[in-house]
Image (cartoon, rainbow, N blue to C red; front, top):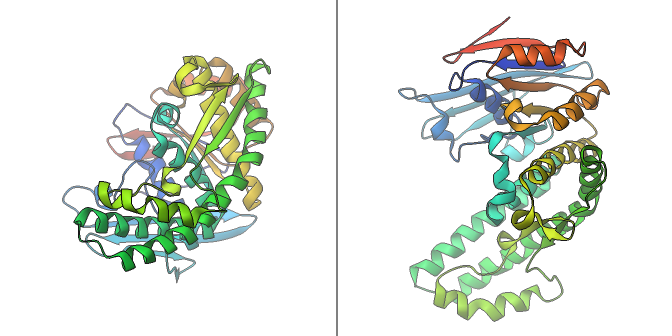
Length: 348
């Protein structure tokens, strides 16, 4: 079991690809949301040959220290304790350790399907609003139940009506939160993008949804016959999308590689600012393989923000110590370096 004490500001993890840097960064994310940033299931996080996952951490904020313990015995229910008090569910962990994770595969948020963009928005809203997380969990559970019923071909219309009523109720809350989220988030996004592009381009986000709260009940009723025929759920907030726009055109279709990288960087910094605004405290910022993610202009902007104390605690990973050392030493920025070799971590 590894035990590490981190610097309160900048922590650099360096080592070869595959050495285990990302695993440590993901452990911090897991402590924040009780789920991996990368893996779909907890089972995949348990080391081969082992039957148990245990993650323990202590968080210091404003002079107060909180302990978090997450345990997952294979095949059993995961348990979470904060200050030795067992939580009823993961939504109660929200806000204790907010985190923004920037990873090399973030480009899927732009180039991927609507699910990647919904996941991005969901991650922000789940961290800043525990009720949103609870409603989203309930919505997804009922959605799975309705989908299974439709696929079975044995239609119970009374049960379908019950499922639809539940989906309308939870979906209305989800829709309202997403709608209220967009305007302030766009303000943060546009400011960040302007800072790194000299204001040369106009960007926007358009929320695309089937949800018209005035007649959503009728919409569910009108499409029911088609759902039964196709054996698929055809309406709901799980169909929402967020269209990224640059100069009045879709970024996914018309954006250059540089524009997409700048947009993604601005998107993540806007995520950080939004969560900080909602919770009243700064999240942890994690940048995995940050030299691969950021070019010179974005690196310069990031360093400028670090010097302005925009961020609090930061975790970075890199394959080479020298280039990170040069980046920080030349600017007089203090940091703590950790060497990672075959899953073993040691402070320099």
